Amino acid sequence: MEMHASRVIAADRMTVWAALNDAEVLKACIPGCDELTGSPEAGFAATVTQKVGPVKATFRGEVTLSDIVPGESYTISGEGKGGVAGFAKGGAQVRLSDAETGGTVLTYDVSAKVGGKIAQLGSRLVDSFAQKMADQFFERFQNRLEGDTPADQG
Image (cartoon, rainbow, N blue to C red; front, side, top):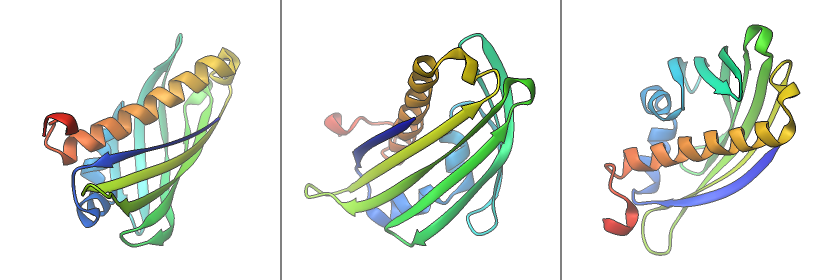
């Protein structure tokens, strides 16, 4: 499953970059995140509880950052195991650039794979769930940086 999208965030690039590297911000923005500890340098340990169709699972896993170009881009990769529910594995290339109208353009290319019981739910359900998760993360991230004010009302 792959997704490509971008959004304009009403904050300068270094503010967006700092938030993308802040464990507390990431924890608040990841849907279902119960715990996120660590640092960008050492990697993060995460616990996320989600329900995909009829399957509810708690995933425990590691998140690492690589290909880091400060203020511009990085690759975030993660893998989580959810016991009998299976596993989820994926990553995103995240890029920042200055928006013509001010603010920052955040562009992301996401790829994800699942296995086990979750994979048996069918690719359409899993793909739509993954799309929803990515959208929720970036929506929460944008709202957090913009003070919960939609850009068009700013």
